[in-house]
Length: 221
Image (cartoon, rainbow, N blue to C red; front, side, top):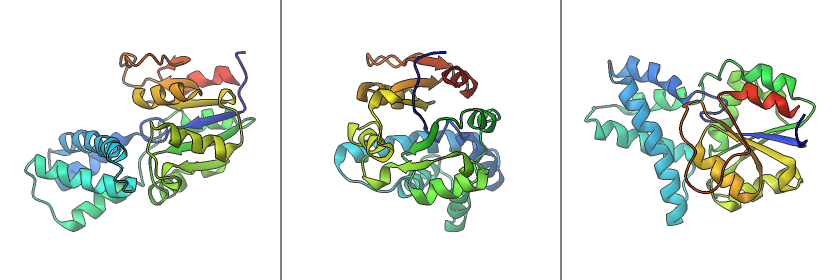
């Protein structure tokens, strides 16, 4: 038993859901290019959210995801049609969740459970509904409500305002090191779900716990 928390807040992309799921659909549309497209698409998706936050030029995550996809195909010199873009965008609402996710959520229902994502609601809600996980969550929190992308402090403040808790009462989980750094800097307890076995970000914000998958958070029960 470790220090109790009242709420568990989960990042979505890469934490609950495997963004590499889109590789299969990319391969179907652009034979042999799936991995190359999916990796660059994800990289540009994150980059555009950071750039738009810094520039003060907010667009929804759905718009950013589409723009990142278009850039990636152009960068890779791949010809495409608009209907192919729509198919790949739809694939983002049908991502597979990691195998341990549902069991962990089921075990932790004695606490308040929420997701907190850069994803806009028109991406998040269809994805979580499709996965069958909606029943486990008390709140689906999107930065789109305040138009402030993670890791800005204003985005994490939105979580506090939504849940009505103190910072130290929240355990925040993400597979993204930059997101963990932002949440730790804000004052949340943090658990880095280090699925890629990466080094800790050198930002002087060490996570409270590091796990290779979500099973590790069961010690917070």
